[in-house]
Length: 427
Image 1 (cartoon, one colour):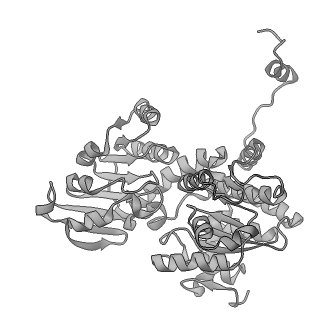
Image 2 (cartoon, helix red, strand yellow):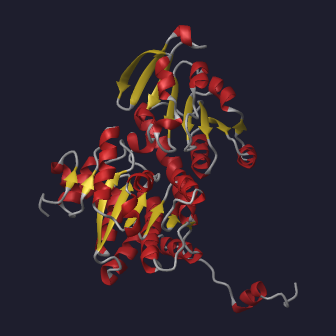
């Protein structure tokens, strides 16, 4: 491919390295490979345009290549300023001919500019990660809404925002809640976030997890995975929650449960996975122990009130890559010493590590690819609301994954089917 492909990336010369990374991840993405083979034959998206707002990783690259094989003209932008793998972005542009507008470490201004560039492509389908693109479209570009067939969303935060749009009557096209598919959140959120978050903490700090008090803020599927993995590494895990059912579940799983105000005094490592604003706030920062590590694996860095932390700090120094030391002012805090913020409070698993393992993103991106196909095939029959993929899509993806792992399962006999589907057969 030539360099005439539209792009705004860090370094086009990294393309060969990025393509090796893409091919390596593809080895563990056999479900998506099967879908790509079918898309290549059928071309379900011929002549269509799409905007993909996602973490620009090797796994996302395989999804983008799959969509292109299906005939889609896709533009890629980053969903988080620190999540782009610059070599992968280069490979997508130079080798695969896919327009990318993303740079690792891009400013908020550049992030916003890339959203505008993406919307300038006049997409018919939007694949969002956090719903910033959809919010921008509805607020600033209402004239383009009529051209949208639908959107897909794979984050918990984004789905909450889409639901709010629906409740206010402003969601003007169908939206697929990909995160609600079982083969997404039961695996990506739990096992992917659990492993990659601890990987990010370890790469950034190389601290020993065993013996530390790890505070997990939020016990959704992501929080469950992080708590499980931290416990497996020997941490004493505290969970904070606002949902009594989830809090009870965490207690039954063997974790300590308490409000963040109490946990702030005990924790050594704090990991937010809520998607909400200022979950770790001024009073919490004041009460943390010297040397506390604070990071986020939920959505944007707004989960941490870093402005408040800066206000009570004498200085901010990057002591190693992805680790900034905030030296608290003794006159403004209840405890002396420093707090270390990892990855600028952005997604630590992507800021300091490589994100979720390819094997788990295989199922997530299979859902994304099939969600796009579902929107295209059913565009005249879908309501303008948030909805999930049919259960049979989950079954198809799970079966393909089992097949790729060489695993067989049992089938119901005719007698079993009769028993399950009839009320006349006795016990």
